[in-house]
Amino acid sequence: MNASSTPLRDQVRALGARALAASRTLATLSSEQKNAALLAAADRIERDAPAILDANAKDLAAADANGLTKAMKDRLRLDDARLAAVAGGIRQVAALTDPVGEIMDDWSRPNGIRIQQVRVPIGVIGIIYESRPNVTSDAAVLCLKTGNATILRGGKEAIHSNLAIAAALRAGFEAAGLPADAVQLIDNTDRETVRHMAEMDDYLDLIIPRGGAGLIETVVSLARMPVIKHYDGICHTYVHRDADTDMAVALTVDAKTQKPGVCNALETLLVDATIAADFLPMVAQALRERGVELRGCPRTRELLPDATPATDADWRAEYLDLILAVRVVDDLAAAVEHINTYGSRHSDCIVTRDAAAAERFLAEVDSAAVFWNTSTRFSDGEEFGFGAEIGISTDKLHARGPMGLRELTSYKYLVRGDGQTKA
Image (tube, rainbow, N blue to C red):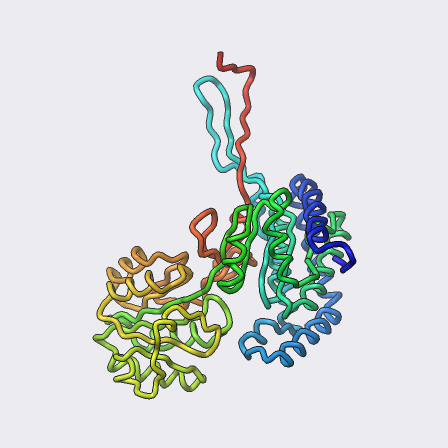
């Protein structure tokens, strides 16, 4: 969208009108037509790679000037490999089964009426996100595959990258005969654009905010349409008294340090009191070798006196950085209580050789994804086999956890008869 003297609200609503028109075309497309458009978009991403990387360099220069953290800059950064992964991700989505048109249920009534429940697109989806330019592609292609039009509003940190990626996608879709307005990116990062999106329920069927608590709370308070929240990733690993300690160290290090600036990274480590004296020095050494700052409860600091004292705020913190809160807990029940009190219902793990303890943890932790002996970094749409993901929902309705293609559909009932009446 090009900036103009037109009032901002009218600019955003104009996007909504165009998206609604595009969605009506998209809903009628065959899987073959949508897949051809996705493949064309992947080709265009590769063709436009130099321009996209140049745009990303502008965003990275601004990030340096504005003092963004190392983790935030890593979320923002594109390079040849990451851009190739974006194109590869689009092709992966094209290869996935299209859920639209799937018959979810089919039955007949005694009066002869036949009823089918069939998956259909949602319509027009608004997605508000921060800093990660690959989300521009992930969101657009998943929506396209499911016959939805989308309006994207990225953060100011990635504005140049987002615009370049969206332009490439639009060009690819248009080259394949689809409306370019299947995906539109708001080029104005004024906060008022969020308000205008949230208020246009005559155009948007669903809005999905991905970002910090402030953004999500703002959208929820303003939205006139359904919201699916992608809240903080306050992820936990609980090291049970019967854990394989070598495994527990490896899983902790991976979950915290493999990519600390993402929502499925570990933020709080819970350690059973029975093994704390042996385990905490082991895991602390491994974490410190990777530059992790530890913030511990009083019982943790008795064993790790150089850990920073943890406050109550640390148990609710999504650091997105090389910082880890550590707490010693009495038993499994105390671990579950901590997670259900302080967590964000995102992704949590137990490390144990005790199957009964693991099954209890899996059942009692109220999170979208609960893991046994597996890094929380696997809480991801691609790792789940969904291809790209729209994000990880911390809601319970209508989608929970990694959101793939099925989560971007609704359903309707097709009712067929031969003249039946109620009279």
